[in-house]
Image (cartoon, rainbow, N blue to C red; front, side, top):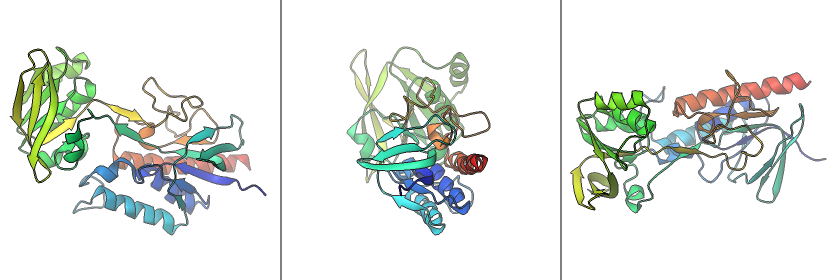
Length: 312
């Protein structure tokens, strides 16, 4: 007989592993496909100091290994493979079919927790200094730059928000805005302009990063009108040019917003398709934190359990 899973989880990270823990404890016998980056964005974060229960902090990879071990303790089956195609049923109680390469998987419920990927500039230096001063999340890493000078790259709402957040912690924030004006909303622009320790450099772009022992010490920037290159002494560089939700293979079937994030029903993780749920950063462009991702992972598993109960 063809095997049909009660619960298939696509993607790992805090949302996927938390969904697995709750689904497994509800006896849904979930199977989880990690994707290309097991553990998600947190595996590129060196220190996590804001997740409850870790008074001394924890590294991102270590936390993900612990979450995975907890999911496996309740008999979640982990597959180190990537889901490459999906055909969702539109019927209540319908069977969803997904593929990992040529392998076909059928499931009554699917929890999508594929996350979002921070956009970077594409400089080789960004990878060299990742975890040593280059970050895409001020809320996650800003604490480590208390009293220091930092740079924020970007001119939209994300950049303005990151800059004003960092200004409360750091000595000085320099914003590099590629054009002659912000793309941010008026309210965010006013907030930046009214923060005394933020300096905005219009028509400036980051072109290089320098440092010692993998730690950022200087940023090389160019004035794109004069082509003049200069150096700024900094300890942290925050790339704030947005995130891209990992929804490409689902977008034709699942309702997404204008930026590609999956739309869920208010107060729920239900999507527009029966038996398909979304958790974590793939449906959250506002908070984007490990703790909120874990919370929606819990919700998705409980929503899946309730859905299956409704079919009986």
